[in-house]
Image (cartoon, rainbow over all chains, first blue to last red; front, side, top):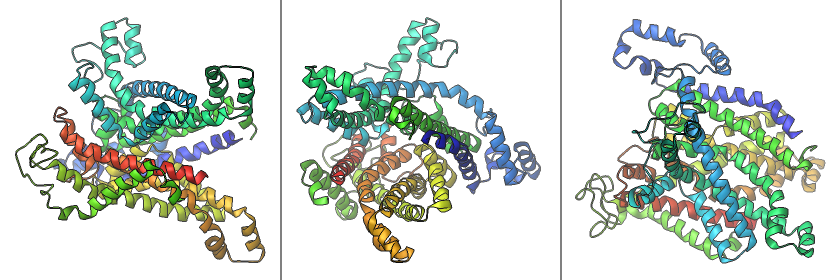
Length: 335
Length: 267
């Protein structure tokens, strides 16, 4: 029921998201025409009028908004003032880089976080548990950009184990684009030199971004595991003589995973936030770096598109989290 | 709640760290440190001698800059969190108390604001208003108020079902009296528990915005900005170490304190 309610509200949410991103881009005191034609051409009224007409800026605001929504619904986000290319094309080119980074970070963070939580819950209040809790507190307190710089300094500058910023060595030829995810594309093309370099360059940014996820997962999963271990079905299983390890993995973990999985799908917002900063630190050619560059150059169509897509993705991930929870936990289905 | 939360050594340490930064923020101009925005020595001196944390690319004292940074980050974050809490609490109380259309509208507004990944919305707002510390603060305010609206709304709705409120309704108390005397006083706990955790997270977000150049403009001794300035020359680690440790210590202290409070609040 909750799910249906949320699905029904989704259009309201999406329209609101579009209105906010559109409103923000119009609330600015700066005339967007400056960004298109440049400061000097502003003195020539003919040029300004032509630019206005070309970009549809001479229409009433309501018309502009409706056109904007209609276009966005068809995947047309307008043309970037900065790159002079359709924003959709720009984004499509950069989305796989962010996707690869976010997926790697989520995977890494979930695995590390779950492992830490299991160790912690196996021997609660022990030395290991204290260490894990310390890590979890530090993990949510360290800025992503600082974690990134720390890793970069330690493993690239000082130890020289891993390459520095960038997604691929400039001397290597990227594989033909198939999915856009370098690791998949390189494996598909069986170009192992590229695969190796791409994988080595992915480690540090994924670790920087995954750090926070690991801390969040460890915190929540530890708490739910310990709660779960006190339940009667665990006591019963223990009295049947099951080992503590089996209890934890087979009986406590499946139940404790439900809130953790919800958290992971909801931490998408944190990841997007982190991606902007991580991509800046690691010169990663993704959507985050694109958003930042657009914000700096007042490239409204681009900012609008990225904020809107971020909002839409977040709204959808919320619905997916609800659906996933209902799927994993039958008790939630008819509520 | 506070007294029991402070019984743990970790929370006490956290409070001491926060206390240190607050005292620093207030009194650092009278400590006799070099001007944080003026060149006072050779460039890129490693830590030691007259400059315990070295000097930066313009020969400015990193220690002085780091300590002066507290005067920017702390008031900004406190202002954002308190502003967001004030706005959220008032609107949340209205939504929870009135219900109906007002509740629907306010809740949807909060949904929409919460629907944006915080950094992206802050980025868009900062880009709209132009970079600057105050605008970064406004951007973060836009991101944070709905959290408090939801907290307060849920709390008010819970309290409204309690018997003493039902009784007050029955004897004919006015809405204002019920809200002020019978509902709001019981709603503070979750709000107060959320404050320190959010303070830490707002400091993180603010430092992030400054790091990417949408916060305080140079030559301000803002922590995120200082890290960004040092990031291009990582082998001169002291440029990043000072502000980095500053951010980490403040946020970690907020997190520890918030966690302890939350545990106590749960009972």
